[in-house]
Image 1 (tube, helix red, strand yellow):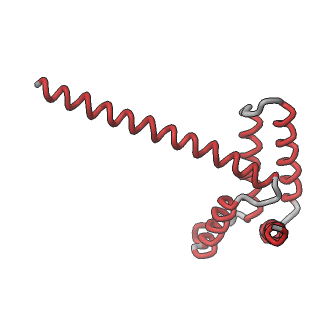
Image 2 (image 1 turned 90 degrees about the vertical axis):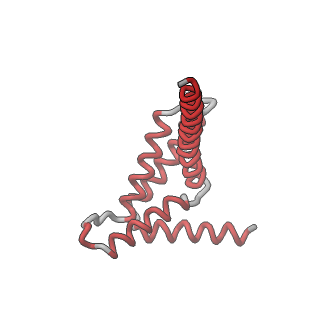
Image 3 (image 1 turned 180 degrees about the vertical axis):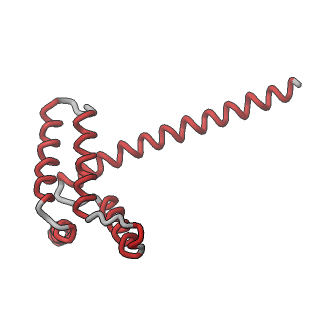
Length: 137
């Protein structure tokens, strides 16, 4: 009976440790993704992860029209930037309010510009910016 209790405590401790590290990793990844997306946008690039996700969903919709999702790439991009804006409005990870307000203003300006663009225009604009940046390096 005593050895069973010992094994149980050891297994419980290991499982708890794994859960704690996994939870920490997930939280860190989520925060890192938000900051990377904001950094990309403010540096004139479209977040690569977003682009892959949007294009993947558009491909699924094209291949499986029965899903009837019919969400434009622009709408998906606007939803993502809205979520990013809300993230930075609710969380204060900045040393001062000025830096936070500057980031939010930049994100809102980009969002407003995207509203009047198609997905193809958004993607093309950022591809051209990326090509120009690569040539200047």
